[in-house]
Structures are given as structure tokens and as C-alpha cells.
Length: 152
Image (cartoon, rainbow, N blue to C red; front, side, top):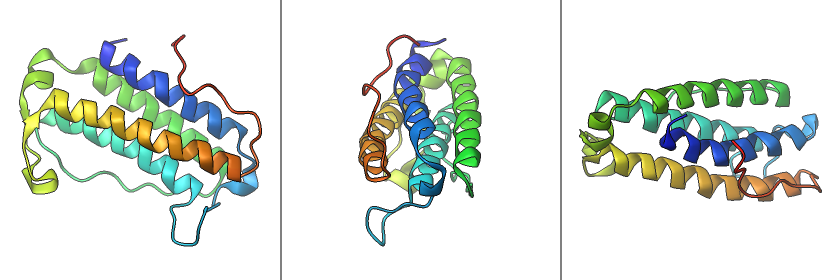
């Protein structure tokens, strides 16, 4: 496993652990009416990470994929599939792709080296993982994992 994928997986494994604890009937739980649902937040996390990784691989940002789920088991499957896909993409990146410029001005207002976007990918995952801890608590999960899993 590359250093890039191991950094992400230390956080992603915690998301997977949290989702394994969420009751089935909480898939659409929202902490307030206009918030993302628990499932939408998790899908946003995994599709965004994949989008960042694929964009670095391709040298430019396109649009992230749209994915919908209808149950916790479906959500867990989607998270697992995207986790494997993103890990494989990160492991396949060359030094040239990581160091090279990635076109992103049309979305983020600037172009930057791949390593900048990969750092943003990791930070985005961490930010939303913190939200997921709160969502899970509100969904009734009492016992939570540590915030990072180092034995990946």
C-alpha cells in the first residue's frame, strides 16, 4: 500500500467502523431538516475522495459521480466498493502525477500539483469524518471507534 492510500485508509477504516454500528433505520437520519442525511454524507465522502484521486490521475477535475443508496447495507457496500476503487487509484499514481499540475481552475479557482489536491482529499475526509461521529451519536450509536486506525 502506498503512503497516499495508507494515509486515507487510516481514516476511511474508521468511517467503515462507524457505519457498521449505525442501525438500519437511521440511513436517512438528518441532524436538522436541511442537512445531508447520514447516507448522503457518507456517499459524499467516498465519492469525493475517489473524484480527487481520479482527477490527479487524469490531470484535470471532471465532475464527481452521483450515487444513491436506500439502506444501510447498500450504503456499507457502496462505501466498501469506493474505498477499494480509491485505494487502487492512489496506489497506481506515479510520482509525475502526484507532482504534476492538475487543472482545477474551473472548479476551485486555481490549478495546483496533484499532491495539493491529495492533501485536500485527506483533509476533506477528516472534516466529514468528524461530522459522521456526531451523526452516529445522534443515530443512537453509543460505543464509537478511536478517531484513527493505525493498524492498517
